[in-house]
Length: 140
Image 1 (cartoon, helix red, strand yellow):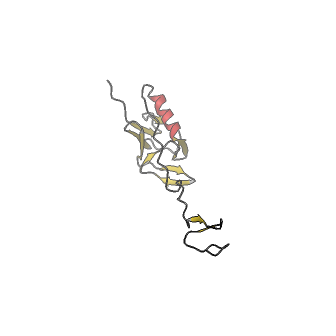
Image 2: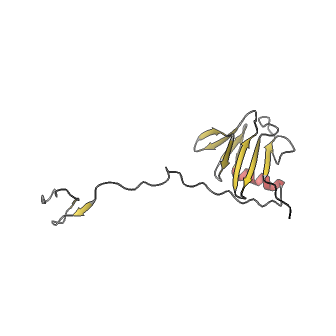
């Protein structure tokens, strides 16, 4: 069984696996590595105009980083989603079976905090009060 290619070059050169015909793209701009069949790792190959990750309205320079399905990457002036990059790789390597990357775990900001506050109980008079406090209605 032939071993599948795990590294893919992205750039302006016809020798690259993903060819981007744009003057802002270096001959070999970046390299995409498939790790474990479902994780994508990108490395900027010292490109002239850089590789940027566009996420949540921010632009972050990439030297080496993992990519997730919803990520958008800018190579020079060319923006591509991770899905578009994978599609281009699959078109060039028709027999290659690349699994979709695993989505990232939820960030701490996405998790809802526990509701904190006083514990409420029902007073003997029927009104609700904070535990350990006097009832505003009956004074108990």
